[in-house]
Image (cartoon, rainbow, N blue to C red; front, side, top):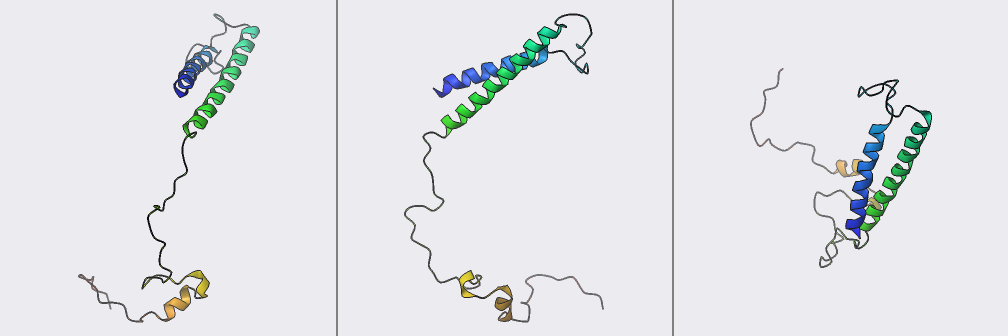
Length: 128
């Protein structure tokens, strides 16, 4: 079913490109927007405009059908594997306090050591 809709979708794409390229160019970007020549009547412009609108609507419909078909048999997945146990309720050391404890970031910083840890590598000399 999905392959049939894809083929129809691709045929609509090619037809839409062809009909858009057949329309009269207002600015002459491709150099084929001359005042005389093939398909200059107002009736032809209306037919091409209607054809473009119909093809665009069909293109939109087939796009929706393809997106529905793509997700049809897909089951919802979880980011947590089924065999994993529930996480422990006690936070790890150094982890922020849970929101329910009433302590904010400032309360956590009050208990932090005042002196920074010794550097692990070379430092840049500071000017005095």
